[in-house]
Image 1: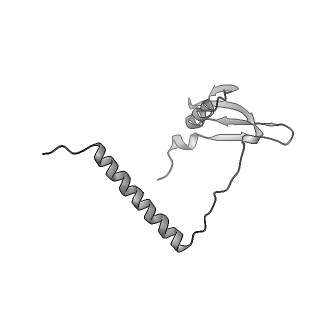
Image 2: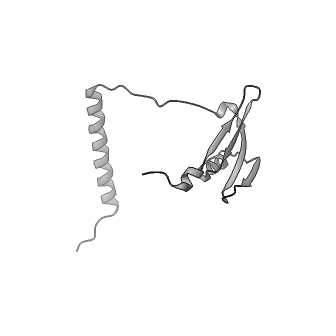
Image 3: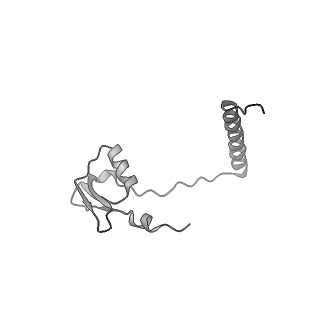
Length: 107
């Protein structure tokens, strides 16, 4: 599914350099704003874009900025099959637990 225009406009830009110990983060993404609020970081500047979207500038320690590729697990066929079976068993267990919490009334 292609992104909507609104999703394309919810951008975040991170700027930092070697001379300073902090990074500046600019964002119009409300999810990012909630995350920063949860972390206790208040915006240093709040504005509105021409399309009416709220935008915020944040100052964060440069140590918070990470670029980390996803980890890749190399599993043997036996390990992969074991995990599949364990996942199916957990799914069946969860399904039976849900059905016991909300029993179907007799007809």
